[in-house]
Amino acid sequence: MTENINEWENRYQLNQTGWDRGEVSLNLLYWIEKGLLKPCRILVPGCGNGHEVLALAERGFDVVAIDIAPTPIQNMQTALHAKQLNAELIQADFLTWKPDKPFDAIYEQTSLCALPPEKRESYGKCLTSWLKPKGLLFAQFMQTRQENGPPFHCEVSAMRELFSADNWLWSEQHETTVTHSEGRYEKLFLLRKG
Ligand SMILES: C[S@@+](CC[C@H](N)C(=O)[O-])C[C@H]1O[C@@H](n2cnc3c(N)ncnc32)[C@H](O)[C@@H]1O
Image (tube, rainbow, N blue to C red; front, side):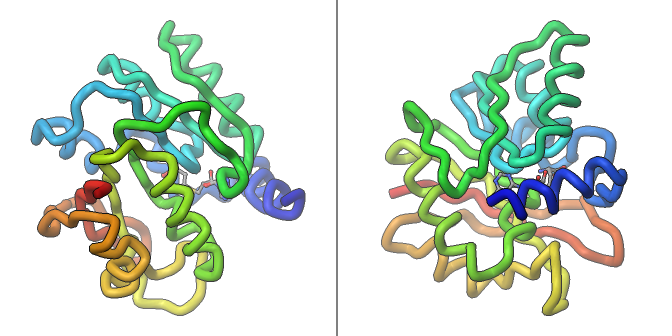
């Protein structure tokens, strides 16, 4: 646990945060503009500096955001305060954290791909347990075509095993124009918990 905090906290301290665009992801705006993501109680796990947390809070969502590293949590607190917005910010390991009540939706952005593949099953169980029945998972599966990470490649067939049809109803793939460094991109799906 401490090792994991230090690993991520060091990246923030050293400004080695290549995933951070400095602004809200167009993928989040896509879900909102399509009317698929509407104000509700939503969790952003592994929120980082939380540009998406701010965008959700601005739009009237009841947002809970969690990250293991203290620095992005502090950054987000400052940004929320400056804009006179509210969100519940939690500094904890999401693999051991339990919410006091379940969520209507989860916005998952580059946290699954940040985890070593051997931790995916635990994280998948967390995502399932955090949502209400019929709750929505806004999923973005990172495509790197490489073995190493982070970010780790999230092959859709492996994701279909992780979020199996026994527990989840999958949408068709949604198109995105968002790309990441080195030609990486995400495959977007909206999953509904059964
Ligand atoms: C690749 S970054 C993505 C940050 C943010 N979602 C974004 O897109 O800008 C992954 C984030 O997950 C956090 N993280 C990694 N493992 C975690 C864990 N076990 N519990 C909570 N947060 C974790 C890291 O501190 C980091 O902020």
